[in-house]
Image 1 (cartoon, rainbow, N blue to C red):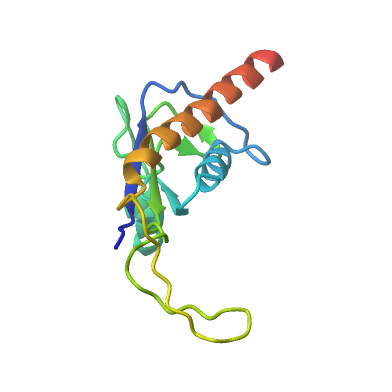
Image 2: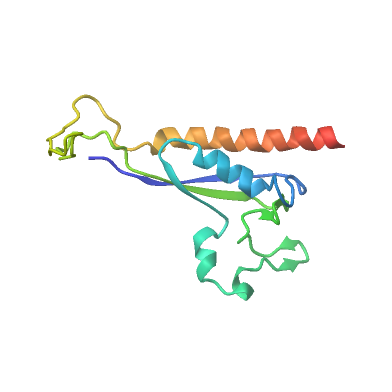
Length: 151
């Protein structure tokens, strides 16, 4: 059989100001890049889905003397980097090519027993880690280049 899993990507030392407040939000660009990776079925940034069950007073990243006291926003506010670490988590589905016998329906509507033989990875996670880091780096680099072109 095969397994899915969750991969976390942590981006450190991103300066404040990368991204746009409307059409090219940093978090939207990152989500698009992460979701374009095969097997990825979900993405969250910062507190992500947990934020849906939090109160505003719990989710807000209070500003202290040294900066933000928490990082529920995952380093991005209003589509723009805020200087904190960017935290992204991606959910990957199990690999569908498995040796476990299954019974899909063919084009005629008949059930057929199918078992895929050969060498198969148990999970895509070890490979997806590197791809997600690369996709994240491309988005950050692209935003640096765009910002430089504007200035």
